Image (cartoon, rainbow, N blue to C red; front, side, top):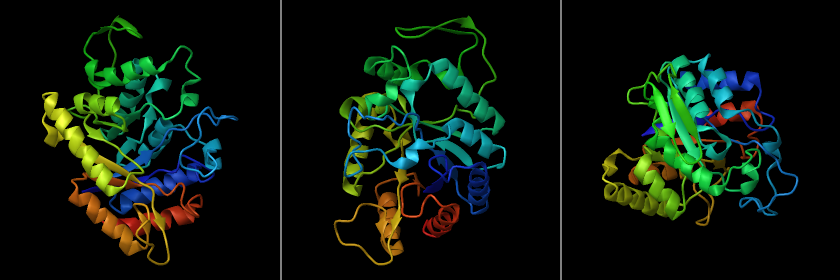
Length: 305
């Protein structure tokens, strides 16, 4: 099972110095991957409460957010081997051909290290910058991520769809990776899970109990089989938000929270349900917005896998 860690692109910890320090140290420690997340708007008034906080407000750290692809490109210039992933890009923001070029450029400059996590976003506030973008357009874009093969664009490209058209054109360079960079989806509802099983290379869940993940991953593999795909090729890539306690927590604790030994047990549980990778994100943990704490947690987690 692979292990990854978050690149600090959210909150006060997201500085040039921190991105460099985390990227270089992660590669030294033998981590397999670095990951960024997508945050753009911090709405003054949410149209839907944030499901994680008690009062439904967004965390303050979201007011400072580096672009996930630019942050990875910055890290790519300071590393040589570690994979570079997004968990996840909110697809309603992007024109698919422009996104394909940005991702391909990153894959080209990093010499084949890109992994692409995609999602729709949980709140329609996130769709506001894209004039004319709707839920149906977003779903079409997600669908097109495989059907139009944006990371291995044909030469010449010629695509006509309901929401986007591309005239017959040449576009390059091509991705270094063969096959093209893997696509992981953050998906939880039935329609999204079916798209994942039909088009994606893996599932990127977060914030779920172990039993729930196991059941949903089994469902995804069954859907992949029904779509004529080999279910064994679908990867489970888990994003973990650790919360390290000084002493063990009770049975009601959430996954990846508690003592170091309890978190180690959770990692073993993920391995047992067939996880291919876990990447840890300390953005929201106590003290996580301090670089020293970020690096210390990275050292701790590396010893557990």
